[in-house]
Length: 103
Ligand SMILES: [Zn+2]
Image 1: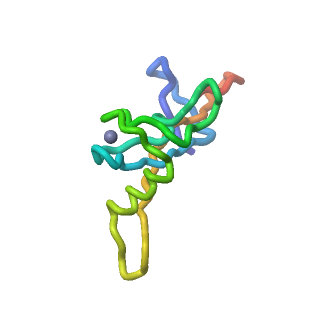
Image 2: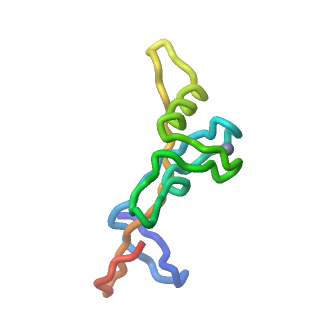
């Protein structure tokens, strides 16, 4: 249904699924942090609860990041709300005639 361009820049790949990551606002500098990019621990193959802001190097806690996002967007009459923002971080795709899958 969705296509992407392979690393060669020409071949089209069919996307099987996309991984989305939460985007936080840094409590120190206010800039956006893509949780996956900042917290991915490739050795442990997981995401860290605490990670550095890539912009100002402040130590951010995942829970604190969420709270800051909520404060940025305030409250409504309907109560506490948060526009949690997501960014695509990984696409798994296949190329016609090739049994391998790519990211
Ligand atoms: Zn920061």
